Image: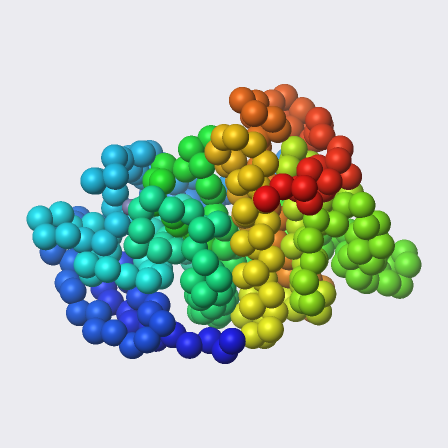
Length: 343
Ligand SMILES: [Zn+2]
């Protein structure tokens, strides 16, 4: 299934861009009628000299919308008498510049990605064609943002569920274009470099070979992708999705890999949703190559939940929050078995 969609770029009232992705070319001429003041940006990024990690302070985000009722949702299409972030009366997938960007005023950038105009649904219920279209949208935005000066790493992700801190329930994700390499990517690059020096081999290839051979932690596979609970899972329910053929980022995925991802990812989300008789909050996090380290990378996705049992959430307390040392109460092989049986 080759990519087939049209993109229309428009401006919102405060100058931010909105991009409509449509499965066929449509007139997208609605204007933003809101009286929006230009965004005041007050973010800056500071190096923590002790840890070598970059910390972003974005105090303007304190005023952002918090869990509005459905009839006030800013991600629903506009209707007469109520203008939202999306001026059109309907849409398929839209991406707009986040009004509450964590990196406003600097080289970084924050997008909001609305997966559907339907308020009361989830990514898991989007269906294959729409999920596949979202992969194309991630690819288009990643290519655009990676090409910008000062962008070091592009992070596409979805926070799902109030328990995870989602402030809007409309199905949406975000894209952060960081002006620095994130701590997780830095650590992976250091590990890969050390592995190369010590063994002469590629770390990603070795890790993937081990995960593939240890079948009791594989949840599901298809011709292009593997989904497994990693041997060092840090979250109660955690799955990693790796393409069998190596690529650095989402734009590098070919049509067959994009089709395969959409299929396996929907399957994983449906398994997560079927685990318990209550909502399953999750974070879906794309790990793409930093702009300067494309050859050293292997694209993958982390999908994990903070729910460890019905009625019980995993909180990041002293060991995790202060020391970064995770204590996980679940067994990776048992979790994989639970996920294989779910649905
Ligand atoms: Zn909505």
